[in-house]
Amino acid sequence: MTFRGFIAVDIPPSPPLAALADELRRASASLKVVGPEQLHLTLKFLGETEEGLVPEIVTAIREACAGVRPFEVSVRGTGGFPSLSRMSVVWVGVEGAEPLARIARTLETSLEPLGFPPERRDWKAHVTLARVKGHRDLDRVRQVLTSRHDDRFASHRVDRIHLKKSVLTPQGALYSVLETVSLVG
Image (cartoon, rainbow, N blue to C red; front, side, top):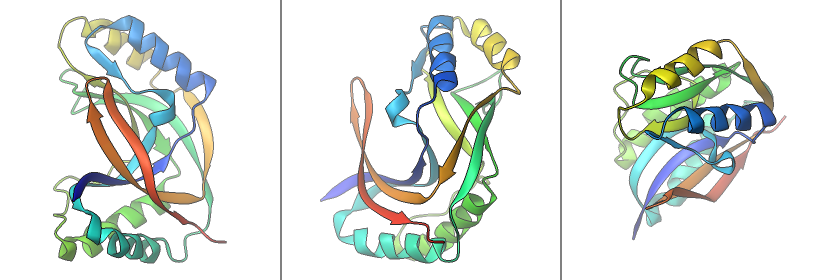
């Protein structure tokens, strides 16, 4: 059996993030806004994953996290991928995520022998807030993102990394935690 997998850090909901999500929801019907309980920072998207590989994936996560102590990140700034003019994803930035960048780079290397190809793009610390599902009414979205470009939405202590499963439904993706690796220190 396979599942759609990814490795991530949860980002807990905060009132400022919820307010931004509501503002985006009102700005355009072309956005599919992520629910507050689903917010996360992806370290590695695995895609279709054999259940039998879970122990090896968890070992790779443990090894990538070795020596990384819990730390604080700041959820700050807004933007769109690939750009505000042609966005397909609306995101908030994450500052102080250098330890996560190191973990992500290590995972790219250690998971390749298990059949997970490395990303072609450099890893960028971000939390997806919405996906663009149409291209109408996006000027208002751009205005919101530009006006909130430097806003600080939350800070969060990172002390665990999750292997997650994603199930796609008509209402959007549903995520569940399969395994957790705690940062020690």
